[in-house]
Length: 245
Image (cartoon, rainbow, N blue to C red):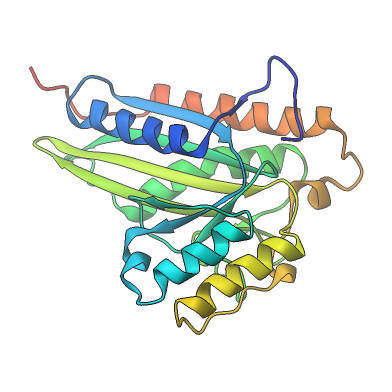
């Protein structure tokens, strides 16, 4: 991790523990034990794949090669595509309940997830937008892009409830752009799975590049602290489904 301050808004934890935390909070929300949860976190180097990717015939071979290269593979419950994790990546997990009356859709949930990130970028004087970026890993129309390159990727998981939905949303932010080793590992994984996809390092941009004039640890800390504050404020004021009695 690039920040080590005791009051860092980012929790450094094992990837398995982070995935377990997300699953537990989603279960709590679905059961009516809580309304929402949010966390910024970072973890060790690894690849995270959606369960659908495991159905490709070369998946086991791909996992073996990735593990040998120092990139162990974990499966996740949300959709999307193959993504890397590393100490140079910070994740925002936002989980909440949405009532049926509110008629929240995928787009609403994505905007709720990304609003704190876009707000922090704006506060730092950085313009951002949504959009696909050819050559980016886990590409999607709700990437957060800066200067036409991918800064953050997003994913969701919904669990139906009797009075609404429990929603797990996740954003992955690049503190630094992917290095050659990360890109080579992603492309080797796709090749082993027989998937015709090539990831391009130049399709991505990291916070370190975006800030340019102020690349200090303090600047990164301020940016991430702003995201944490905005995320929790959003959850505190948002309407939620009524808890089950």
